[in-house]
Image (tube, rainbow, N blue to C red; front, side, top):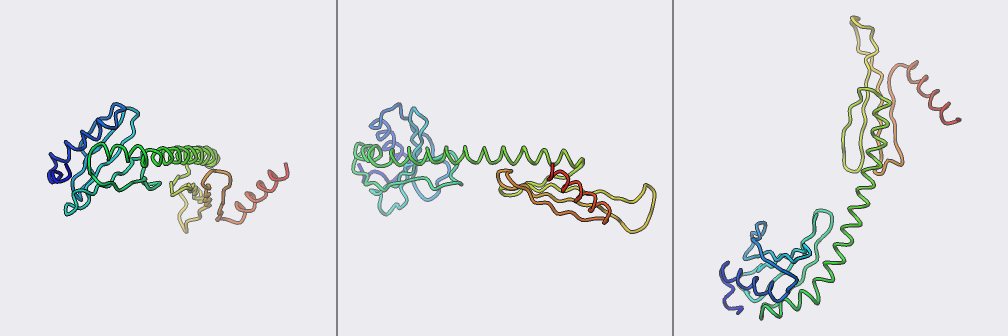
Length: 203
């Protein structure tokens, strides 16, 4: 069978046989994001996806099988190397070696996604509170932190001359458990702000 894995048609047929051997209502689909050689996607009834690839056409008997994860930018998907001696052998190696790694990686990915969602939710709540206290503030999202920028031109309406701006920049940390603030402007405004902060800290 391995000597026939030289065209995409032959590889597709082999992948179909592997899917039948795996059972669990497996089906195959086109692998669109693989450009190094022959490949095919195998998806089971539980939604688990595997990428069957032939990375080197000089060795058509060697396959690389990758477990697909929902977001592979956060962690490396597990993979195994297999000799394509028969569809049954490949299916057995997937079941014996790759499925346990896939289950472990999927669990870790789910836990990571849950932590990130909780982190983003906490940061979002604090950002909304900060922006609410600074009407008209501008919000800039950054990697695992959010910057809130508020500026106010203190010149009376219609008055010309040098720009006088009171400015507050607040950096909300990854989970919203802490913030950093940088204040600049007229001494009277900054002193009043510091006094209000000190008063709130004592209450």
